Length: 109
Image (cartoon, rainbow, N blue to C red; front, top):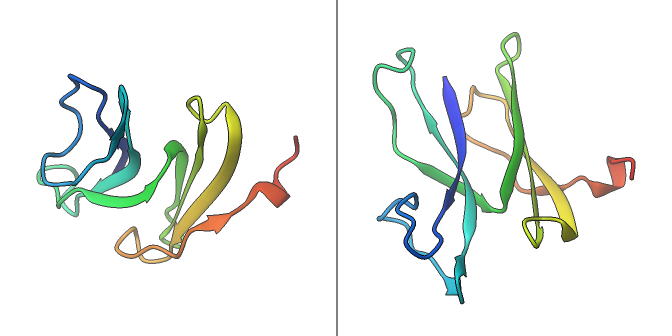
């Protein structure tokens, strides 16, 4: 079981894990695509893993192959402007992930 989320911190927001460093510009701070894994159906959870800077779009899991694909964007205005879409892939049930890969050239405007 893998849970993905945005690790973020807006001024006054306590959703950002305290052990991760953060950089703020004015009111807003960095947003990271993060995940946690459970190998016992959610009874216990591993540590928060910070993958990449960006806003999570979606994550999908192929149970047959153990492949996880997470897609997310980086940009301004909550990814509404100057956006680039990326993905990371795991072939071992989310234990390790590939390097960041831009995928805009595969997307239809």
